[in-house]
Length: 267
Image (cartoon, rainbow, N blue to C red; front, top):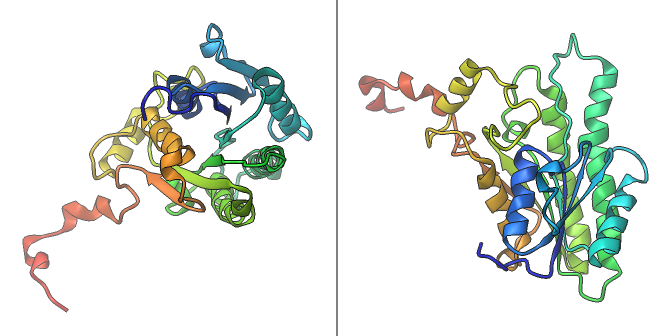
């Protein structure tokens, strides 16, 4: 994705102040786009960049999505790409998670994504030739969950399914809808919010489960998002692109248990 690929385009990135979202917003800037960052916290990382405008608020709040689209139109004249990255992800087991925490995850990850996508689609549908793209961020745990992650995994599975439905509904309007599902991404250096959330032993275990042998970089996800939002992906919609180093390819963690004798067994 070279410089100028998105010249004249306007991208909205929810959750763009930190982590993967920050890398995505920076990627669009590097490719020539103007960017609206919508987040709970100010987009201070981009404070000196005239191509970026930040809007602070909660995507789960009614009316916020319309404010985001209004900001894009008033500042840059239109919106061409929406990236749904904002998410809530508190852990909690079935026995311990409060119902309010469960609802919050779905309010943000599912309903908030729905409302932003709806507002964006309505904006684009009013144009003669939309040529627009939505890319939502999911997770490999939508297919390969872990204990304590039911709310987050289930919410992202919902995002993937509703994205496929939206792809069918919006395709005739010239709006493509796709999903990027990251594996383990090390956001240290890209986030000022909870950069040490995962202990080192958990990080090491996650890396051991990746066939390529290393954690992903936020820019790996940004590259995938920019591709799906670009003209090069003009015939791709309704798909989920896994960017995980192969961690969801199969039971890679069991490779050490394959013995020479077992490898020759048949039947």
